[in-house]
Length: 311
Image (tube, rainbow, N blue to C red; front, top):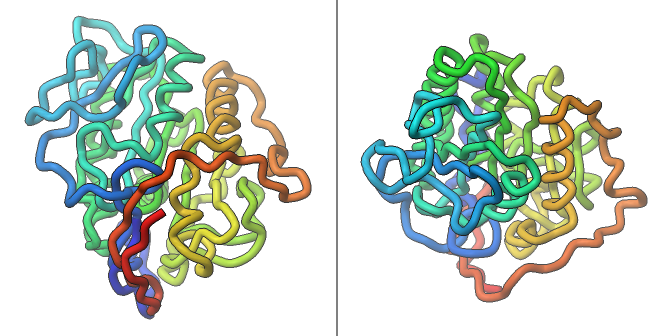
């Protein structure tokens, strides 16, 4: 979820971190960071697939120890020896807990099923409404993990994944000058606060508007465009600046989530990326609305305050 005050944030470099809203996708079950209080304080571990992932996704809850069958945090190596074929580096949305965030669980499970041999690293960062410092902390943690992976598993590919505030983490990470761009296989973002209409890498039903954090001037480096699906639904206030939180919670289980899994699987196989926007011809949405009952706290974005919402 996103909340908090963004107001007129001054434009700063990506490494200076953005200054978006004061409350992001929060977390419990449907979309961005629904429900859940603040992020748990447990360290970030990594879960691995061996074959299809069975159950919950997410970081291990212990202070940095690898989850069973998972990856040793920061090493890029699968517990028990050897390097996984690829690593998903995922950043959850505001309010979702460090362990087993749900907003993008379907994507992780789907990709690990289609392409066995992967592992998931949950970026360790507060995921609170401190949009100035939180995403910066997340990008720093992700960079440390990736540098360790680069040293220990130089041929391992990366799939970067972010939901709402987590998308801010991903964009700031990619904007770092020393980021190893050649390692990135694909980039998937849902409800990105930095989203802007008209980009070749945009997917989803939104055709106009701009994200609540776009005034910061922080943007996805265009070089990553062919490897990116920046997914935004019409009416998602976080990525379009208008509408409400209902659409922000609808990404899980949609056709766009499935398309993102297929896209990332093809990219891991070395296939040429499909034309941007190919999955939303005519802008019609074939998405399914996931389960009901997701609650979100109040939020303030771009000068607009919204009370708590429930769907």
